[in-house]
Amino acid sequence: MKLRRITVFLIAITICFATAPGRVANAQSDKLYQQMTPAERTAFVSAKARHIAREMSGNDYQFTTAFEATIQKHVDSYVQRIGTGQPGRDTRAMFERGQSSAPTINGIFKKHKISPLIGLYIPAIESAYINIQSPNEAGSLGMFQFTIKTGEQFGLTPTDLLDVDKSADAAARYITRSMKKFKDDPMKEALAILSYNRGGNNVERDLALLVTAENGACSICVLTANSHKLDPTFQNENVYYVPRFFAAAIIGENPQAFGLQTQPLSAFATTRSRLW
Image 1 (tube, one colour):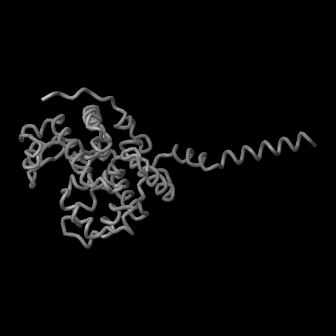
Image 2 (tube, rainbow, N blue to C red):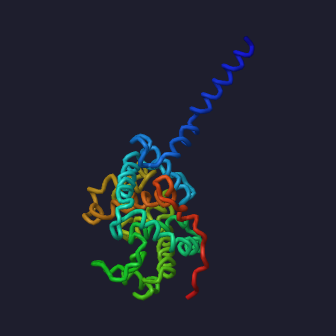
Image 3 (cartoon, one colour):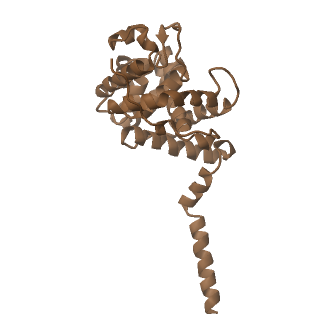
């Protein structure tokens, strides 16, 4: 009888351990994202987005459910493009390209005491890690897609914009400047990323229009949720920038969860940047 009680006790402990939250999370993490249920995908994106934010800022971002849903839409969009073979759009090929520049970007952003995650995933959404040689309609060049005018502000010539080391260094300086502008906001890193696409003065104006002490816990969420109150450029382009950044970072930092056989881009060893 005593032996039976011990056996029942051990079985109960085993069941409790197997169904503990941590064990469930680990079991889910073994699945590919593409194999998860909708609820598991939502939980995965939420957890990974908050982890990226914490690694990037040292703080816990208070994302809203709606903002995380927007991130997930962009994650799903990237997932749909894995292995398509479309030039410039295949997600697998994009992150394979990112590996070659990751050591340089990591080293330069660390030198400026900024999270390398910011430097790694801005060019993902700007150029898909392609060092674009011809200017687009806005006059942007290179992997970091600086306009010639903005490049001049950081001492870069049009030729310099095609140099990944120099353009990464300029991007780090741009982000540093923007983070100082928004230093009192708990999401200054996200606002600096938005500024890279929209311009710091425009973001500052947007915040003054929409963000208050009551809703300011997630300023980037407020801007995104109220995009219809801002100008057409924000509505048609800028509103997607930060959610897309987080989506790219989630995949790039968790590649094997999406069936990509590589390391996280932040794991690639840094290299000494050139002096100029």
